Image 1 (cartoon, rainbow, N blue to C red):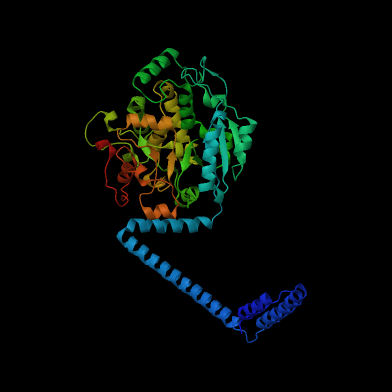
Image 2: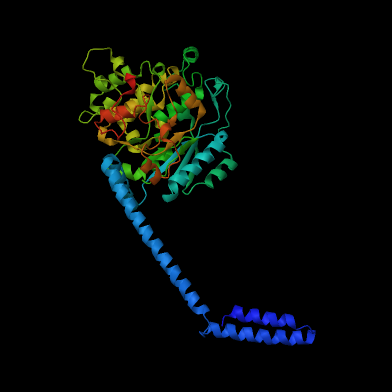
Amino acid sequence: MKVDTIWFRLFRIRRRLMSSRTMMTFTIISTVILFTLLLKSSNGGDDDTRPIVGEQNDERAASIAKAAEEEAERQQLEQIKQQQYFQLHPTVQETYEVYNADKAQLEARFRENATLYMFATDSDLELVLKTVGNFEKRFNYRYNYDWVLLTPPDQQVIGVSIDDVQGEKKKTLYSNEFKEKVANLCSGKVTYGTIPSQYWDSHDDIFEIDEKKLLNSMNRLSNEQVSFPDSMFARMKFRFHAGFIQRMRIMNDYKYYWRVEPDAMLDCDQERDPFGVMQTRGKKYGFNMALSEDKKTVRHLWRMSVKFFEKLNPDLKETENSALDFVQYDRSSKKPIDAYFNLCRYWTESEIVDLSFLQSDSYTQFFNYLDQTGNFFYERWSDGIVRTVAVSFMLGADQIQYFDNTGYNLVNPYVNSWNVKNNPGYGGTQSCPSDHQLRRWLHCQCNKRSDVTFRPWSCVPTFFRGLDLPFPEGHDDHDWTQW
């Protein structure tokens, strides 16, 4: 008999008993009976609750087995779909296989002798924290690479403050608060440094700045709506990165650096160690974005560079596997030398460099040749265009590495607003994988429509064509200069 049936009959008897003494006696007796029945049931008696529990366990086991079978079928179907997708998109399969091969190879290695490098002032603290936290989350927590942060000296330059001309004031030297907050985010060692004046300021032993000529140049560039037209700070920053970053004593401790700009973000996980890729493939220069330079800031750069490499120092020019097609048009026709310069430049704000290249006598000789002209100040040459010309003349195409699918995004509103003005249709500095499978694998948080890699104003297509590389699926072989 079921326990609940016995309890119901006892309850009906209980209602008929009215005296408290009788009620108490009945309650004790009924409790003993119920306890005895429950004990018997738990010990395997003839109560029918045991088979019910057994049936429930069997049903649960069957449900778990069915779920496992369905999951196996789902995974098998997913693999079939992936293979079908790869058959339709072979370039994506190649990318996927390269990622897996690189990852397996690089994980078996020790981390490279490399550092992440950032140029920032104390006033940039909030942007620095945002960017460092992002790079640690997306990349560096796996490898614990060091960070090097450099700031300019706080001093007077050619009679004016470093930012008086532009009307800005920057607090440059790092405070204890800055150092502590940044260090708390970094998984590797952090080194803070101040750029010595001989690497920042101009010196008479190199050239003497003509202040009147400089102010006239600033006014002209301002009227022509060039970016940073009257900023001494920008000029010295460009000059420092073009020729002095590699001379900093702290950089002697490393073979590679990856430059990180404050307010830059990685919108995808970095499944590969880019430093490992540089090392295993023997690369000297790496980039993930390429845009065009404003021709109003390079009036004499190309002509002087051609003279240096082709007339004064032809032995410094790479001849067997030249990468010059990235920066010049076909020179078979007879045109003025400046007409062959296509203004393409690597985005040095996120460059990855083998320091042995920048520290070489050849590169130093080229930089000193340009520096003595004073045109880092008069024409406002950027480090990006100078580095690009040097890489194109001095390195072979097989020594340059393009890093795709990084999700790199420079949020800086000033840079983007200038590019919108000077590049028709410009949509920002965003790299985002075009394939949805890659975006899923790399946990990207970007919109493929915001990717500028193969847009008309990008120079990445010129790099692919110049090095005779196959274009990713869905992108045509076009050149922004023809638009």
